[in-house]
Length: 529
Image (cartoon, rainbow, N blue to C red; front, side, top):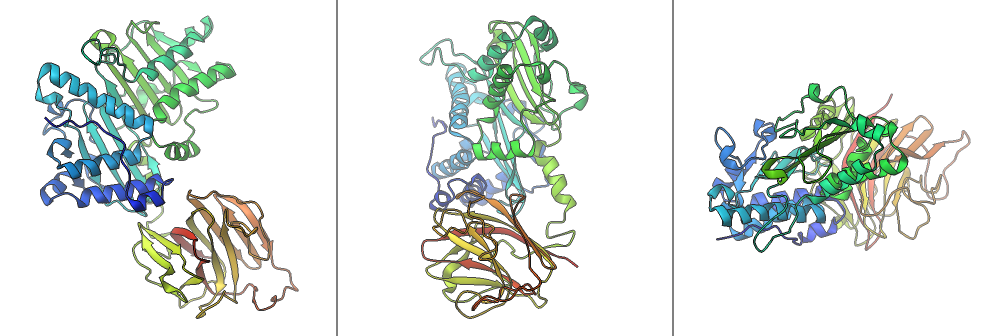
């Protein structure tokens, strides 16, 4: 009998280059997995992004999923190489802690399978489904699901993450017999919550405890959208009634749920919507006040719900879930994305199709630029520039792109320039891209005109780069923070061999020198009056 116990695996060579970029790793892993499947298996695995199945999630055993059982391709149906690639996809999404937790949840199925012998307990009955086309610039998603695990990942515009619903369960939560006796699964969800509960004063407990009887199940259930009416108005102890230490302990409870996911992903989500809202977070409890008695709790903010119940099977059956009231399956992100057209939104136009260098022309060392995983990669054996070809020059505009530098790399984005066969562009300005290269002029400097000497971004992480030219004013930003704001003086003249004078022209990406690797994606421009 084959057993599916997830293990840590190395990613592909290209994935290693992007070791700090979960979106690229996930896209690469999904491509590799899908490409390994025979036609029949791929048909079971791959769905359109718009398919209703994407939101048809369950945490019951497959035989309880109606009407046709659990969809997707089960591990049981995969060849050994396909299992490896499937596990690589899961590894690309979870933290080390999350991979261990997933492994132990599946191990519980193995224990019950050996004890009961029922096929519904087969630990290979965990399914993979992919929705849409994995793409660095598009929207797509995927799911890993079986009994007591439903992990749903959505990527919008190839980079913005949603990881909810994120369901984890355990039965038994504590193994009481056999060679695994004493093993606890999802223990921290319980221990951190009891730690917080015990810190509460009697008046605080009076506010927090809704009932001395715990519900049999989490209230959010398996609905594809959380029922607002169940949770609004919010009940329980508000964060405004907690002391600083208690707020820290409450943060620890939330971290147990979020830390199963990649830290870069959690950071992005938290920056978009705080996991712990500073004024509108509530903690509610129901049931017994000791681990041996049935208990339930939830933490809710205006955006998120963290819910836990342990009441079944003599208080040895845990259900824990992280939900997003408006954004399960990336709904809120997609709504925002769809209000802006994919290719032309309020005047914004894509300069790069994510697949080819169509519309761009390199000069010397033309092999310096390539397209990989939806990115323009500048990896120069020597100096090279990639010029955007346009019949109508750009004068006043807004430009934005996502950029990632590998350590000790140097590049740039030229504007108001024009094509030349070789050499550094003599016309136009360079917006510097350099975080750790030895040149003191750092990212978003208007090179040689207004220089930033402290890097506003880090290597191995995507950052947004923005340039605006309006008349005689140039503004650059990194991650929405203004780095340079320069107005060309009336008596401004070109300097030396370089004609750094605002006028009009095109854009060029720079490959600076051997050893520099810089990536660009989602390059867009909007003309201004």
